[in-house]
Length: 83
Image (cartoon, rainbow, N blue to C red; front, side, top):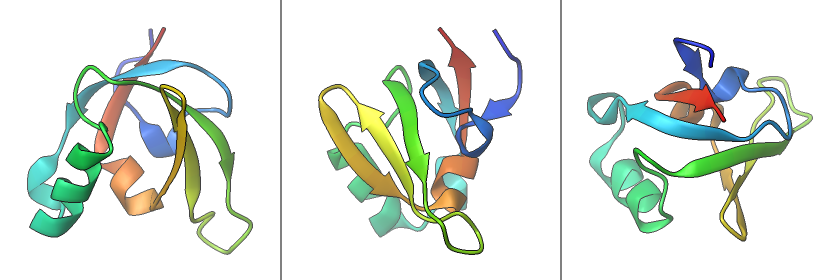
């Protein structure tokens, strides 16, 4: 396991579990959207690929059988542990 690894730094196709989310750094509507998608502590995720734009936005995130797009800033708010 890698301590202090944030989701935006997770290598592609490496499975990880979200261990913490800095909810206070996200706008309330953004946090609500992430919760609705099942992106919260304990969720198992993998980065499928990153965008080609300057900040590598968006990040395609696999969670369960879904693939969702999230912003890099949102991924930076999530601490993960490789599984």
